[in-house]
Image (cartoon, rainbow, N blue to C red; front, side, top):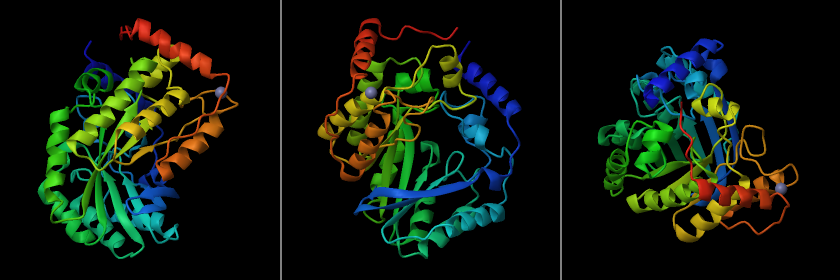
Length: 352
Ligand SMILES: [Zn+2]
């Protein structure tokens, strides 16, 4: 069985089990402290429910860890409805000076089949009116990054930074193809980043790579090594910053299926610390480590004694780009055992 067929079946099952929710019910927003290009500031996160990621909706079945499709309305959402939802979400926040607005649609912000140009333009116009907003960050697969679409966005934002984040996940094509089912390769990523780089002379445009920590069928040691190698690769290609997403198990994914069978475990927080230490000393661009899901049953985990301490330390180190100080906990030896064991066996698991 090919991974695409398996992912297709998993997705069909997930869709069947889904509770039907309206686009407004699927929307969300929150704010937090964040690191901007100009230093410490705030970020407002906006989840805008578009019909669903083109990759997940295609024959490919989508990525092995992604549940965006289960959180998508799966039907056309009109431009006026999207604009209305966006306005209401933004009204909830008192936008402070030095704010970045990060918009997450169900797939790609730049895909006009998913987010109609009319809605995209209006959203950017609304953001452009607020002088406290310094950066607008969106997410897109590389195939939707084109000079024309980017110019449209940048022209509407004028003086604000427009950042395109691409879920590269790993700098290894093998991992992207066989463990993530990502549906694109490094060469596609490089084409998109080069378009952005070329535009930098004329526009305030930047790029970011999202990197995924510990895909399925990956040992603890491989996960650390791949995360570090991927950050170096992304820097070499020329992205402006990196955001790591350590695995959390989402419903209706291959990752959940393997986890339930005891064939997958999210990464140790110790491994995350190891990645931060290596990347912050070997990579020069800003690197953010996402901590959502930390310490929960489905997320990165150490032990009940130290989960929270580490999570807070990582949040702080994101703002300062510092290397977290050494703290000790008895669970460290168990982590060491996992890393050394996985180094001996490598990952020989396969999907039956
Ligand atoms: Zn511990």
